[in-house]
Length: 166
Image 1: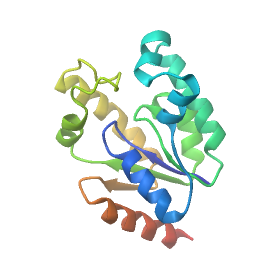
Image 2: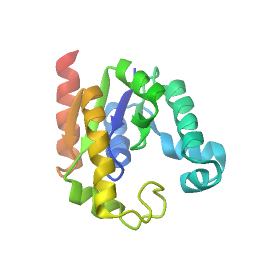
Image 3: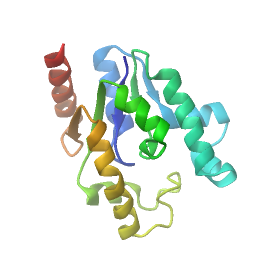
């Protein structure tokens, strides 16, 4: 069974996921990296050339492929935009919402040309996107961690919660 990390872009899902996978002796998969490798081009190029809906279909195929495996998966921030992804994640038992203060998120992503949904967007439009996604993250999250905390603190919290459920 997969442990999936969900949350807004810039929350730290990939950073935390790599370390969590190492701690749990599980493989790690970053869906965005996987898609970029499979397609042979950057996510921003996929968005520019094929559009967001094409990218979301690739994201769904990757999620379907790996969600039943024993793996730690870092998802893209918009994975919940596709209803099929939402349903797959809703059936998964361990979805961890990696979140933090919005201003921290904004400062991590502003000016990052690799994030198609943030490029040339205003503070208010990015905040609106964040707010529109929060309820869906919350609906499918097993737990929520604050990435303002140290990675070690987050991992200890996650491991304690996972072990408490076994």
